[in-house]
Length: 204
Image: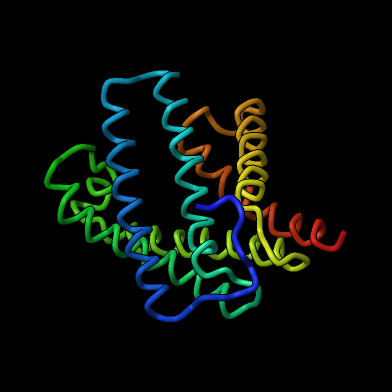
């Protein structure tokens, strides 16, 4: 994603949204493969640190890539950006089923819990992906409300900074262990916090 993006021209035609969803889905598949391959030779704290870094990077991409493509400044484009995130999850599901699963590069514990089926949790992944893109686009729209450009690097930095602080709070208080799943939760909560914060900063 570019450091600075022109925010004045919203782009939410079908071609742009679908193409963006395909790119996001492919990027997700590559990220998941890297996550799985790097995790194999690692364990303990080193594994948790590497996985956490990858989760932070992946969360930033899924939250803000749709916004960078659509450039939302109002409600309808924000919805289209969320749609782009949803399409990215759908594309990833196809790639995962056709390519990653046959390669057996990671264990499918969730399938085992569901009696051999992944369809009890895959729709939740689709909804979660749409929500991440929706929140990221909301932050983007609020940030660009008072300016013609949006510094994505700065916006992402704030979200990830909040996520790191929330992760530390969850771990130090004993509410959650230091784990990639905790970081994923913190990224989601950081986006929720960043939405009103972006509105406050935009009014200054």
